[in-house]
Image (cartoon, rainbow, N blue to C red; front, side, top):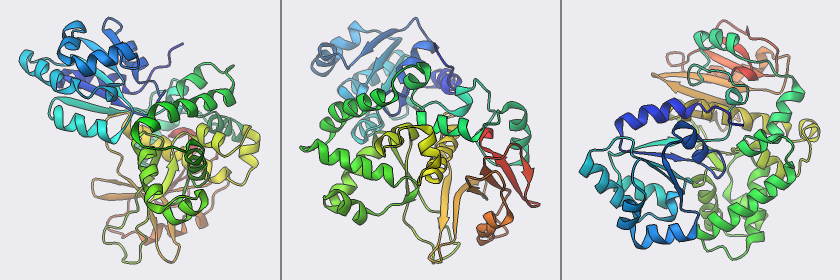
Length: 403
C-alpha cells in the first residue's frame, strides 16, 4: 500500500527547472519509494548493491552510459565520483529532471553535491509521514498560526483523542512501521538501529565501540526537548566534549536529530544562545528510552517532552515537504522565561506554546509579552483540545490535528 506524500508535486515542479533532483533524509523515510511512485517508467538503480557501487566509483563514465537518463539513483552518497559526470551529461544535453537522486543527509555528500552540481540541482528534504499524510488529508500551506490557516485547517483536519495522539507518537513516522501495522514495533526499531550503525556510522566516523555510541544515542533521546549541554552529555556517556559534538553532528547530518536555535535578534541581551535538541522520530526516540507501549509513554515522566518533540517535527514537515526553509526558533532568557516555538515570517514573530492539556489558560502564554509589540503577530497554544477557540484577542488555541 502506498501513502501519498506531500513532496510529490514538489518533485514534479523541481524537475521542470533543474537537471537533477536530490531527495535527502534519514534512512527509510521513503525517498526511493516516492520517486518510483512519481515515475514508474524510470530506470532504478541502487548503490546499496556492491557491484553497482563499484562500477559507479571506478568507472563513473561507463555507469552513466549503462544507466541512461531518465534514471533514479539511490544512495548517491556511496559514489560521489558520479556527480561530476552527471553534471557534464546535464550540461551537454541541457536536460531537465533527468537524474533523480536520493541520499542520507550527510555532511560530505551535501558538500560534494553543492560543489559539483551548483545551479543544476534542486534539493528536497524528506522526513517521515506527517499527520496529514497518515490521514490522507490535504494541508494547504506551511504551518503559521494565522486566522486564515486555522479556518482552513478546521475544515480539513481530524481531531485526535489523547490515546490516538500517543499511539501515533509512540509508533513513529517511518513508512514501514505505519504501512504494516502488524510488524513488530520492537523488531523494526532494533533492526533500524543496527542498519544505521552498520551502514552509516561506520562509514562516517571511526567509532570502534558501538556500545558507547548506542549509549550516546540513548542519552540524546532522553534529552529530547531540552537545552543542549555537551558537558552533561559527555559526562553521562563517558566521552570527551569534542567527541560528543562530533557524534551529535553525525545525528544531525543523517536526519535523526534537529537543533532548534534560539531567537535573539536584538530582543534582549540576556537571552540564552544555546539550542534545544529534538530527536525527530518519536518512535525511535521511544524505543531508545524504553517506553514500550503508548500507554506507558503517555503516563510517563517524558510525555510532555514527547508531545513537544512531535509537534516541532510536524511543523518542520509542513515547511520542508513544501520545499521551504523552516524559519523556526524558540525563546529562553536567563530569567527562565521561555516560548516553545517562534515562527518568523515577513518580519513578524508568531509565538507558539505547546501544552499537554485539554483546558489551556492565559497563564500558559504569560511569556508571549517578551516579544516586541511592533514585531509580534498572532500567537497560538497547541494542545489536546477538541476544537479551536480564541484564548485572547491575538492568541488562538489550536488542536494538535490542525498541524
